[in-house]
Length: 158
Image 1 (cartoon, one colour):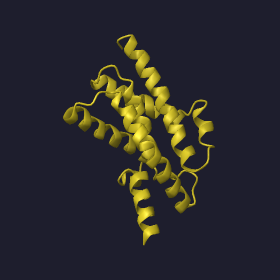
Image 2 (tube, helix red, strand yellow; image 1 turned 30 degrees about the vertical axis):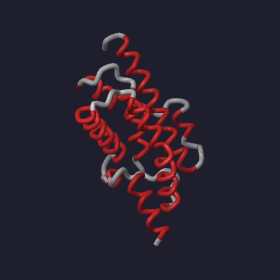
Image 3 (spheres, rainbow, N blue to C red; image 1 turned 60 degrees about the vertical axis):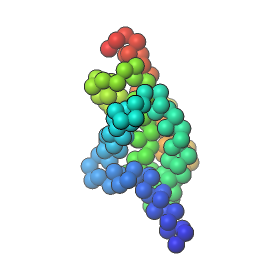
């Protein structure tokens, strides 16, 4: 019973409440779910962009553990159903927005998805790290790349 409960908890976190079970584009759905929660936090709890870095840090341990557990249980290195990594990467991208408006929300989403799919160096090489660390690390790096581009665009008022 204890082991089953741990697996269920890991699955709940790693699939971000089931978002990962979407038949088409589960990573994109995970990113959109991350933005939906972010929007709620911004509009109802007055969160500012840098707060999302703190949220990523709080969720990092559970994300790595749950992604690794789900991967191990499914016998896959990086199962499609694991989307908690996209959630953290998306929050990192959003964290660098100078202001939160329609353009910055859309740019954070598009930039993160671009870097997550394209996987420029060293994003792809981070996937080789073991277990949940490798599953999460590449998306964090994609989020950092997206955050840098979004931040620089904000410096030029774009």
